[in-house]
Image 1 (spheres, rainbow, N blue to C red):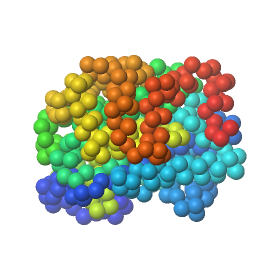
Image 2 (image 1 turned 90 degrees about the vertical axis):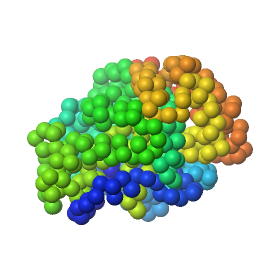
Image 3 (image 1 turned 180 degrees about the horizontal axis):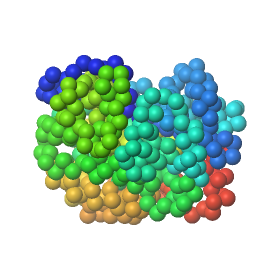
Length: 436
């Protein structure tokens, strides 16, 4: 969940000053970080852990040196510090250590982690009873109920994901990383799909998280259509900022007061006419954009790229971080990935490849976990084989990162969602609980 700073009341005087924030950190060495969400339930895996239990678990995690926060209900998010992408090994170890400690704490307190991105049998009405009483969460719930379809509330209360964040040097670096990232999207959906094909006890044929996000509207979900006009990084920044300024505000701030609009017609541009064009409201506007790759604030006011398609499950943050670091950040291996993409019909331009991004992504959403789906002029299975044989051997040998990626890209690996969807309910209830 995006953090909106509580006292950012300063007005934005110049939109050009806002654009500068998206132009890159200027650092030569990139960084990577992860946020891993885990669904915490009672021992039977049938009810979310109570807010008091979540708070106690977070205190124990923090005492062990981990950064943790509570999501809307029943979910603990573990955050890694930023690591240099050249030191992906340390990132992988940090992910393992945090998950190990969380599993231990759950076991000691008689609770379990559901090893899935969507609790299959918890009802939305029951989830609402366990909402964490935090202003940002309560604002989200109230606004979604007022303005968006039912599925939007399910996103906040019935899903868990892993997010990988990377920084970028300048607009050229931003452009390259966005292209690699959107090309990679169907692989992230397929390899990391962990839903059980059920939500609130009912079967669902497609990738559940991606389907639920459609409730936020086509402009705010998935692959942004303005990419079709982006021939370089500068043009992307201009288009993206304009998009944020015209994004529907689910709520906004007038001083310390939270305002819930009666329709989706309120935007930051309209707020500026009322003198409400504040830092706090621009951060809120950014938080209402739910593209697969989101631009989010860094502490220095610059922006980072957050990859949001990875389903929450044990081991997913580590593996997704290693994959994104290798194919998007590390220039030696990322350039080989660029050349591979050319063989599948990509041009390297966001504007020219938009339709290919959308088509490949749609295949992955409709057939979660299936790597035999089309990918450009080939298949996702063929791309995975190319990555395994042409890129992974270039990584440092006998490391945790290389081992993780060989396991992830193994031709015989079966994504969690494929295993779960074939199980009867009684067996599923047992299998998704961790620790056993």
